[in-house]
Image (cartoon, rainbow, N blue to C red; front, side):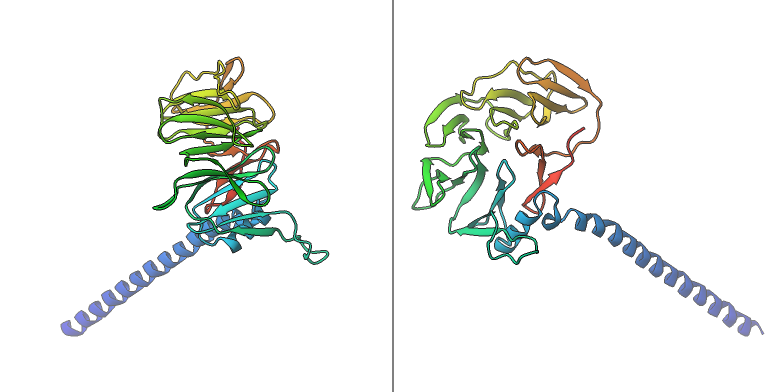
Length: 300
């Protein structure tokens, strides 16, 4: 009797252990299904090819440049470029061969360029790029004139941004350079801060905000002269407001809205904001997703 009772207890304990183990497996599987459903849906919703502002351009770039190291988008959002280690592709316009009644296909224009590090579109829609050079070539800055890339400088900048009349480039030694479309240097300025500098331009392309390492300044895009704008705190990110001289300046624990012309400021409510950049006069904010441009919620 004692042996039989013991066997029953042993079988009962094994059954309980098996049931517990199966319950754990099912719980883990259910948790995985829930996790995938939660994480996959937002990913599909913000997929570069379905982005409301850049979807068609991104679909073109995804097909033409599967592995990308950088991108740029024009200020009117009509054209975008992406590059890899050995080529650059510009997508824009409408393919006349697109079937009637279907979404128009964007034209992809490939260029066999190596060593592209940065790119930016100026106010006229022309693409500027920097090349790092190699063993036999020196670094250079070039502008696409509609037919070919034309050299506009003998250096590869650490930062590059398009303006109304050309670009502003930050040379690796800390020299800020404003260039016109023909390559003429309209102004230069030495920056004490050389690393981690962000350049972001207003919707008109006339003024730039410079920030990095807690520092902040607003300058004229052509003369590089500073405006009176100041920030009373170490700056971590800056957003231009569309169609106005106002900037939203975010510090570690406060946020303020600053007038770039007269430096009047207003304290704002601290909240979570997506780090993005105003693309141009359209008022669309852009962020990087999968090394492509994606639209972002405007900062409140």
